Image (tube, rainbow, N blue to C red):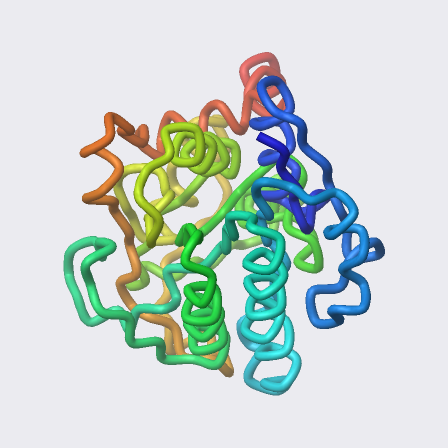
Length: 291
């Protein structure tokens, strides 16, 4: 397959490039090279005429989306519409990356592809709109991911949760993490491999959940990070309300796929994925030597 990855230098985009490069012709485009909100920048996509366009472009600063809804919808929704329209025009498959935040968190067990999305913040609403626009191209895949951590770090967010926790621990700062918000920690390399498997297997078009298996609270996630690394910072649990965040978050947004296992794809657990990430970043070997 000939594949274009939009947002190739982002956290997920970087691992998508790694995942596809060995077996496919893949081209990575950054924000400077293609702007999803501006169809005038799409000439390079038409020239390449790929079989698949993977759109990872997103405005994902959740609280900032509340203050800048027009930007959120411009990138996450209208950008998705533009890419879907271009893909349909040239006969390409559209791949859109969505989020667990399309759900309201009212469930107490992981959301599947069969659950009806009910977002509770501007970011989630804009991403759901992006999903719906993507569906305008019949040849589409929508992958919902969650709580990502990857070697490249999140563009615009200054790393990821794992790196933030490690940094605070190394500086011996007191750390407070919410213990009442449940999610599915996901290694971007694993998400990329799931997306690759779906495309290569030519699974039916539609929505898939591409996360590591299992779920935990952010507090439990931080505990596991420190346990694996042998770090013992001053860690305390707090409630979501104490953070006074501008955007409402779903209290329970863990995801699981009921569709992937039908095609022989079984995502591994998040704990092993975390260990592999820490090894890839050089944290684990260094920790073993130091602590």
